[in-house]
Each structure stands twice: as C-alpha cells, then as structure tokens.
Amino acid sequence: MKFLNIYHFPLYYDIAFQYRDIPLECDFIELMLEKQAKTENRLILDIACGSGMHIVELGRRGYTMHGFDLSPEMIDFSTKKCKEIGLSPLLWVDDMRNFTPRGSYGMAINMLTTFNYLTDNDDIVAHLRRVAEALSPGGIYLIELHHPRDFSDLSASVAQEWMESRGDITVECSFDYQPEATDPITQIRRNKVRFEVTEGEVKKVFEEEQEVRVVLFQEFNLFLEFEGSFELVAANGAFREEQPLDNSEDSWRMILTLRKKL
Image (cartoon, rainbow, N blue to C red; front, top):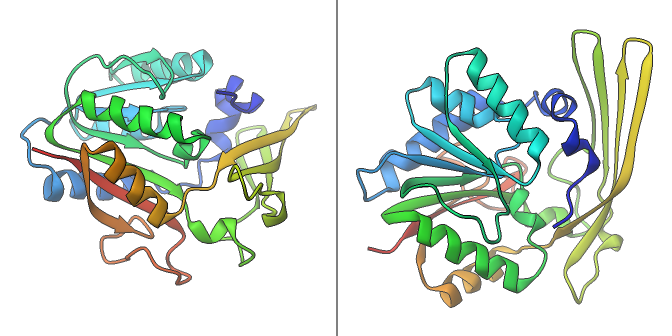
C-alpha cells in the first residue's frame, strides 16, 4: 500500500489538517460509542492514526488509546506529542489490511478517508475481517469515507485547495479531484496532490499522484453482507447525529458506524 510522501513529514501533515474540528469529531465518536456499542469495553483502536489528532483528544477525555499507522514517522511524531502532555497510548507501525491487534477493543475508528486507500475488493474484505477479529462482540467500527458525490460529475463536497500555518511554517494544499480520472472498471481514482511548504526562507514541494478507491454506499452494504461480521447501525453525512447521509450540501462525508454482531 503506497502512501503520499507528505506522510514522511508528520509535522507538515499535522499543520495541513489542523482545520479539522477534532473536539467535535470526538464528541460524535463518543456519542456513537455510548449509543451504538453493546459492550462495556471502552478500549479504542485508532486505525491509520496519522499524526495522532484523535488519539490526543480522546486520551485527554480519559480513554485508553491504541493506534497504528503504516508510516513510522507518524508513529514517532504521535508518540512524542502524547508524551509531552502526559499521555502514553500504545502505538505501533502496521498495515490496516493485515494488522496485529494488541488487545480486544470496544471501538475502532478510521478517519480522514483512509479507508479509501483500500483499492481492491480483497483488501476491503480482509480489512473488515481483521477489524472484526479485534473487536469485542457488540463493539463498533466508525469509518469516515469520501462522500460518494465526490466520485461523480457533481460538485466536490469539500475544499480542494486550502492553506494552514503554524509559527513560521505555512502549508498550501491542493487536491485535484477530477471525475474523469476515475477508471470505471477498477473504480480507482487518481488525484494530483500538491503540498507546498514554506518554512522560514526554505520552500519544499511535494507533488505526486494519489490512488483512492471509489466506494459507494450500496456497494459498501454488499461488502458487509459478504463479510458477515457487522451490521450497519448509522450512516451520517457529517459529524452530527441529526445529519443523515444524503445528497444535500450539509452531507459532505460518508460516515458509517458498524457494530460487530453478538
């Protein structure tokens, strides 16, 4: 599984995505855990945890956190970030297709559309089976995916260009979402991705191609039926319980909450 070169530079990544409302997202995560889980287990696994944004926030709220990422640099960065504020989650390097759990979890989360990096059917099924093995019966799996609208010729659901700064570092980001770049047979879309980093007098440019899998809602339900371990208990279009997954402007992500069958 190939990831973007920016993932080797977790500080730049952390700055680029600091616009995310992590406390709001964690409010939603907590709500789904309390409302949808049918287990008393509250150990949480952050799959593809990146720079540790959700691990830090949920750790501050008192949850014991485990997490892994394919990038060793991300794990080192997250570990140091947590240590600075007195948190000590269990973090390790692993692949979400065949990871080795370090416990039994009441909840797993997969944020920032990382699930869409699973580019073929076998990867998706293998991943779902692995997560099911890691969860307690009645545990839940919350996944944030691209909104299906993003793969059509309709307008994009999220901004394709933005800029974030921290101290003397500025990161300008561009994701070129072009529907015509989607292969209709493999359902793989190739995006042109550019991160331009200015750090003091130094400028660095990361420019490459990203491959993501088109995953549609009805298709995802068929994956669940085929794999057999989960039931879909919520489908939201934003990190708000009152926002369903639909084609409205307020629905900008496909956020699915699965529960492992008892």
